Length: 78
Image (cartoon, rainbow, N blue to C red; front, side):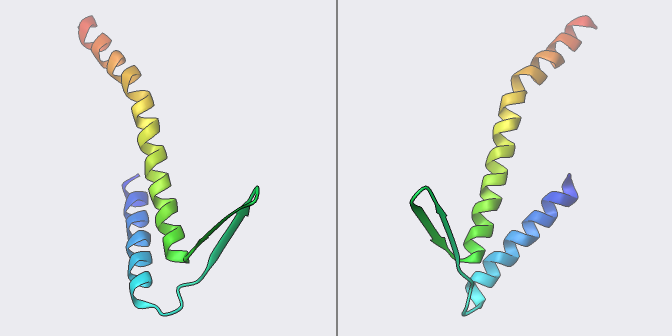
């Protein structure tokens, strides 16, 4: 898990540095149901990284009450 987070952090840092240092940053155009989203490749990497962390946080918050209840029940049994 930690290795994956460090790898993701390195990729995000590389994307930020590439965004600042390169002249031609690449171009991404996503069209869906009549909507068009345009951005550079480093911006897409940052958006995907932020979405990944938002999903992980949501899952963690969803599971937190159940894990807390199990921990409290374990303490009560002792």
